[in-house]
Amino acid sequence: MDQKKSEIKENIFTVPNGLCAVRIMCTPIIGYLVLSELYTHSLGLFIFAGFTDLIDGYIARNFPNQQTMIGSFLDPAADKLLISTLFLTLTINGLIPVPLTSLILFRDACLFGSGFYIRYVSLPPPKTLSRYFDMTFVTAKLEPTNISKVNTMIQLTLVAATLAAPVFSYVDHLYLQILWYVTGTTTVLSAGSYLYYKNSTYKLFNEKRKDSN
Image (cartoon, rainbow, N blue to C red; front, side, top):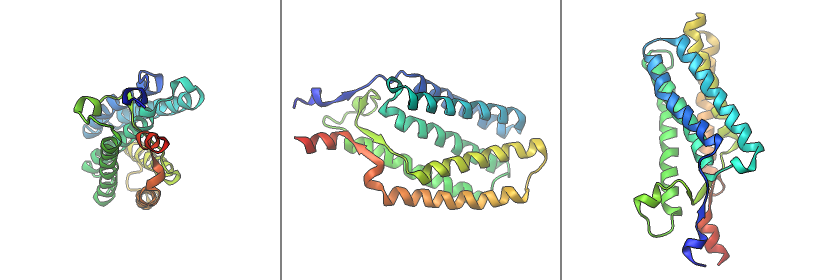
C-alpha cells in the first residue's frame, strides 16, 4: 500500500480537544494563584478546570465525530500537567509533603517520556520534526489502565482537598495525611500497571498496518 494512503489523518479541532486546551491554559494561572496564597480563587478555577474535564469526557464518549486519537493523549496529558503543577506549588507552600510530590513528578515524567518515545517509534519514515509534531497525523492511541484512572481521581481529590484546607481551616488534618499515603500507594500501583500491561496500553497503528501486509 502507498505510504501516503496508509497514513491516518484526523480533524483535531473538536470540542473535547478545545476544552483540554482551556484546561492547559488554566494550569499556570492556578499555579500562580496558589503561590500567591489566593486559595479561594485557585480553588474556584480548579473546580472550573475539573468541570471542563467532565464535559470533554462526556462529549468524547457520546459523540463519535468528536473522538480523536490525539485526544487519547491530550486529555490525560492536560490532567497530568494540572496535577503536577498543583502538587509542585502546594508543596512549595508546605501543604503537601516533598516525598509524595517527588514520587508523582517522577512517575509522570516517565509517562511523558514514554509517550514521546512511542510517538517516535510509531512514526513511519521520514521521521522529521514537522511530521513528529503534526497532531493530525495519527500513529498511536493511549489506553490508560483502570488503576491509572483511579489514581488520577485520587490525586485530583487530594489536590482539591488541599486547596480547600486553608479556606475552611483544616490544614494538616488527619484525613489529609491518610490521603497522602493512599495517593502514594495508588501512584506506585499505577506505574507498575503500565509496566505490566505495556503491550496493551499503547495501540500502534503503523505496527498494525505492517502486520496486515
